[in-house]
Image 1 (cartoon, rainbow over the protein chains, first blue to last red):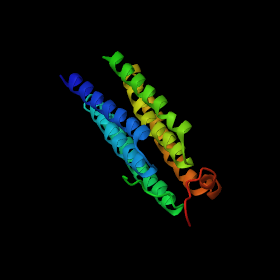
Image 2 (cartoon, rainbow over the protein chains, first blue to last red):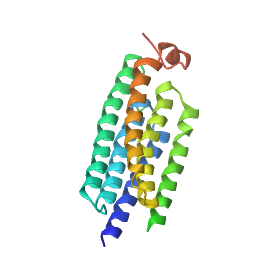
Image 3 (cartoon, each protein chain N blue to C red):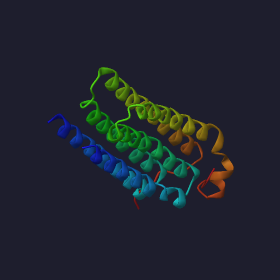
Image 4 (tube, each protein chain N blue to C red):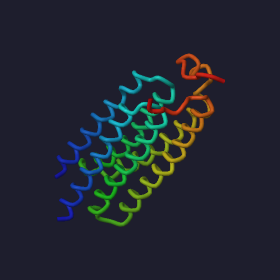
Length: 98
Length: 96
C-alpha cells in the first residue's frame, strides 16, 4: 500500500516537472519563465521527495531527502531573485499583453 | 516497482532535453542559464529516482552535491558571467 502511494506521489511530481519545462519553453519573457521554472519544479521535487521518503526504511534516509529538498528550495529562491534583479537592472522590460 | 522509477527518471531526462531547446532559442544569456538551472533541479530528481530504482543509496549523496553546484553556478553566472555586452548584443537592452 505504501509503495503504491509512493509511486503515485512520485508520478505527480514528474507531472509538475513536465509543466515546469513546458512553461520554460512557452512563456513569453524572462520573468514569467523564471516563475515557471522555480515554482513548478520545486513542487515537483517536493512530491518526488515525499513519495520516496514515505517508503524509506530508516530515519536518516528521510532526513537526507528532506535536507536535499530544503537546499534546492533555498538555492532556487535565491537564484530566482538574483536573476530577476539582474535582468531588471539591465533594463529588460517585463512582458505586457498587447 | 523499480522499473517504474527508472522509467520516470527517463521521462524526466527527456523533459530536460526538451528544456535545452531554450538554450537554442535564447534570447538573453539568462534564458540560456535558466535551462541549466532546470537541469539542476531536474537532475536532483533524476538522481533520487535512480537511487531508488537501482537500489543504491549512495546516489542520494551525488544529488546533494548536484543541488549545491547548481546554486553556485547560478550565483557565479549573475555575479560574473552575465556582462553588459551580452545583453547589448542580443538587443534586449532597449532604452537607458
